[in-house]
Length: 213
Image (cartoon, rainbow, N blue to C red; front, side):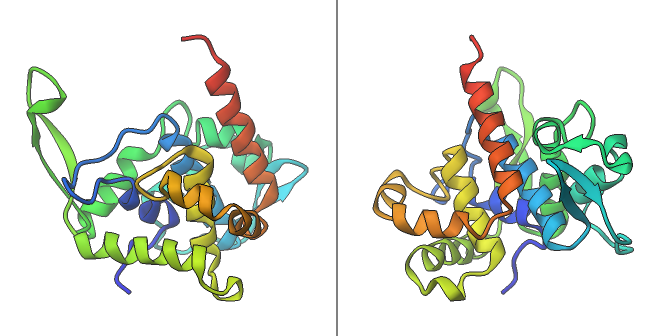
């Protein structure tokens, strides 16, 4: 399958509205993307959990997606093995997120395009739009397979996408109906996601939602 080469990139495509091709706005999408990148690094063997902190392991490949590089090399606490997962979920690369790096990486790979969008304000701005509709359809099919197919056939990245969509309310990836109907399967899929990172995401999301407006 021709899909984005990172977990965060795949989740990002699913956050676009399939009908209009516009990005859907979700409060916790940034946390979901940051968490996806962290899980990706764990699956690649480049990060491990050490008592609730991210510890770098192994040599990074010569070619690593920008959003993964920004975490692995951009946060000094990761280099020192002192970065708590919550910190990296909230601010994975210093004081900025990795959303722009993900969008640019997807544009270069042909999954997104940028165009002027006057709906975002008085003056036009360059905004990302879905370009590769088929890739998004394949990802939606992978989500459905993770929910309804044999659990032993579910790949780690599929489980992660479904769980992150559920935890962060990304309804273009996992509808409210799917979430209600597949509660038992969601429990099984959560067991396939690194537990320390998932717990850190829940705490981070909960703290944000409890903050006064």
